[in-house]
Structure formats: structure tokens, C-alpha cells
Image (tube, helix red, strand yellow):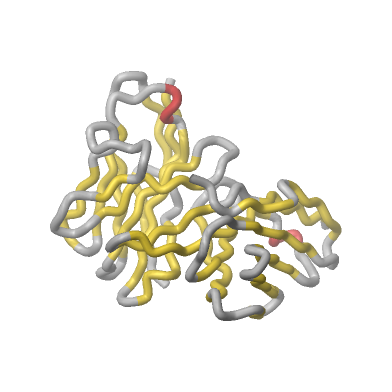
Length: 113
Length: 115
């Protein structure tokens, strides 16, 4: 079942602007991850934040996690046309002997030059 | 990270036929996963491919429809059997390395169209 729910579903901004995407989830998690997918190709891992962390940075990316609200946000600063892609949050759960990721529906980000 | 390749990258198949998708990793990995991404949708986990044992399938997916092989620590196949147009999707394999299974690395995907 889908756990993460991103909003907005689609976001269109101008190059240089910041883009913020949000993710909500329902159950307890060990971590939350963000992935990027270009044009229906493979996913690229962007950043992972653990349940005991509140904020994490990686280059132009900033991720926050609020476990009390079961929500996360991804901020991309100074966006570029190359950032145009779909962004998915995924929650990490431990089930039996396997480790599973449950993906949200994604946000389609368009950065206009 | 890991370098993952998938074959074929895309295919167009007739209803009722089967297609086997290959996933090759450049190094040994503990866990391999197969996902389906239907048009305009998110990823859904089909199964976890376990080396030396049967795959573990998620609810809604069965071995007869999606048989999986994992003969070694660098290779896996997913077969989509008796295909129908509803099977048209992108199929992606992913891997988790070593003791840190948190981050998954994805292959480029196989885009399947069933007529």
C-alpha cells in the first residue's frame, strides 16, 4: 500500500527559485528517503534522513523530518532546468527478514529556463 | 553506489506471451528488489529476490505470474508471464548493499508495452 503522499502533485517554477515538496506518511518509520526520476527512467537516491534526525543537508538539498506530524519536506534551492524530474519520498520499514521501501505518488517538478 | 544494468531497456509484446527481464549488478549485493511502475504512477514493490531461496512476494503479486530467479549475488531475472495490456509498465530492479540496506540503487528500468 502507498504510505508516502507527496504534495503538490505538480510544481512549476522558474530557474533560480526554490522548490519545496512535502511528504506525509502513516506508520512508524526507521528512515525516510527522497529519490529523483528523470523521464520514466531509473531512480536516483538523493538523501536519507533517519527517524531520530530533524534536518539534513546535501548540496542544494535540504530535508526536514517531523515524526510527530509524520511529515517531511524536500527543499531544492536555486533550482536549475536540470532539476526537472519527478521526486518521490520513500519510507523505510523493517518487515521480517527483508527491508522494504514504500514509495509515495511523487511530485513532478518543472523548472523553466 | 552500484552500477546496475537491465535488459531489455524496452519491449513491445503480444498478449499471452512472456518476457524475462535481466538485472546485472557490478558487484555482489545482499538484497535485490523488483518494482513495477504503472503509467503515471509510483513504484510498487513486486518481490524481494533472495539468493539461494525463493523470492518473497508482496500482497497482490504471485510467483506464477512473476517468477523470479536469483542464481548468484550479482544477477536476477523477473519474468512477466501470460501478459495482458494491464502489465504495461516500467519494471525496475534495485539493490541494497552490504549491511546498510537503507539506501537502494536502481537500474534504468525496462519499459514494457503489451498489445
